[in-house]
Length: 274
Image 1 (cartoon, rainbow, N blue to C red):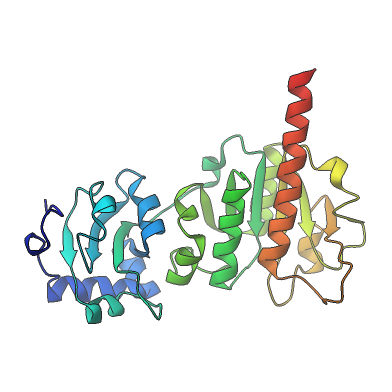
Image 2: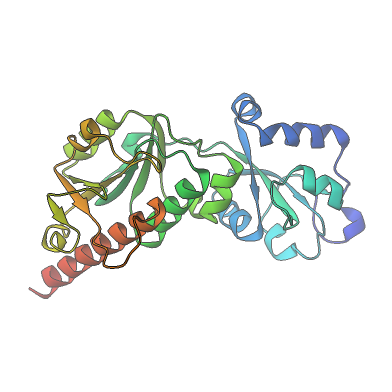
């Protein structure tokens, strides 16, 4: 086991290991290895809190990251700036990359969820990652990325979650109909967020949000097709009073999740007081 005591005590990253890790920047490489890369101090910190997830760590300066490395018991390597750039897709690498075991969750991992987000063919990695981060921030119990959505281990998706990837189950590769059927069987109402929703708006639906709820969020480009919207119990629009034509997907998700989480907590407080 390599320990981050003195900089010279940490071995340089071997050429063979660098090649192996570089393959993880492609989806094919990740699929073959069942591993993926996590870059940045916050994301690596959260990964290290999950036992058995982080397998190896590469740093530019062991001393600078010693607080994190104290929680890592696997192989540790030191890399130069040029090597770190080969493992990063950012303009300015943060100097720490973890090689992690692939995360796989099933619908059963949602447990007794009360708030779930279903991303229907969301393909932008930044949007998907931000939705996951918002779900984590507002206390959702899980996220489902349906078939056709961006890969969860995509470096941009991972980076956009800022560590939230490791806080809640994220189920992937499930058809929308199957996902809806599962959460409905769990007792959740299913609401579809759609800018053209004419059934009711989010404010009018406030009284209905205190119960267990799953939100369907559509694709960034074409939204939610009519046949997908029909799977939901209600179609809800986020009211806008300004001149913007529409909201970004992740912004709409944040608003819907915040409203729902707030309503659920108010309901829990009333139940406690009675």
